[in-house]
Structure formats: C-alpha cells, structure tokens
Amino acid sequence: MKNSPHWVKTTVDSPLGPLLLAASAQGLAGLWFTNQRHLPADSLVQSWPADASHPMLQAAVQQLTRYWAGELNPFDLPLDLSGGTPFQQSVWQALRTIPAGQTLRYGELATQIGRPAAVRAVGTAIGRNPLSIVVPCHRVVGADGSLTGYAGGLDRKAALLRLEHGDGLF
Image (cartoon, rainbow, N blue to C red; front, side, top):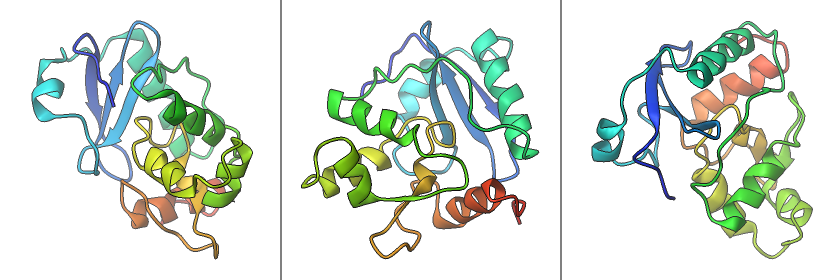
C-alpha cells in the first residue's frame, strides 16, 4: 500500500479504542485502530502534520460520532483509495456495497468482483483496507459464517456487527 507523505492526521477516541484518521486533498485516506495490524509505518505517520481542524477529518469525526450512536449508516465522505492497487481498490469498493447489519462471505465477495478463484487475494486486500469501519471490512465472514480475519481484532469486528444490528456495542 502506498501512503502519501502529504496527508494530515488526527487521533480520536472511540468506544473501541483510539483511532488514527488521515486525509488527503481527495478525501479520507485512512482510518485505523491505533493498535491494529497493517498500520502505515511509524516514520510516515510521524511525518504527517496533526490537523484536527482539517474539514475532512472533522467531517469524519462527526460521522463516526453518529455511527457510534447508531444514527448513521452508510458513511457519506469522499474517500481517497489511491493507496491501493487496482485490485485492492476493486475489493474496497465492493465492501462499500454490503449493507449495514448484513454480512458476506469472502467467496461471495470474490465472485461479486468477477474473480471467484481469488478468495485468498480478496482476503489479503480486505486485511489491507486502509479505511476501517468506513469501508466495512468487518462485514465479511468466513465460508461457514464465522467471524474471521479482522486487522482490528475479532472482538472489535463482533462489536461493530452488534452495533449495526441494533444491539449496541457491548
């Protein structure tokens, strides 16, 4: 994944732990739990100026607040997915079509993007999703419907799905 040295960042608290948000001139470019797998390199993140007043970051924080309250879905933010390969971008765009409160199996997503034999590659692309929650990779489950493979941790994946089912976070 390519991350730009020209992004701005902020860190915010959430009910599931601190979040790092990054924005580019094109839109929201990153949203990661600060302790999840596949974060950008520390040296790169350190090079991004902190700017909590950046309009894109403020819009993201406002929508996240509404999401945590169960009042918002889907997110309505311009996104910058340019950090991924064309294949990754196709997977990330497909994730955005999964309605809140529903799940899709990895194989179903691979078929949806026209690559039914690429289940493992789809899983890898999902794991590298730079926009956790906003690009809802937590809505993808294993072939048997079990919760598998979430870079932010399976406990968070379960909590996000509970929230979207209207059951609250905890």
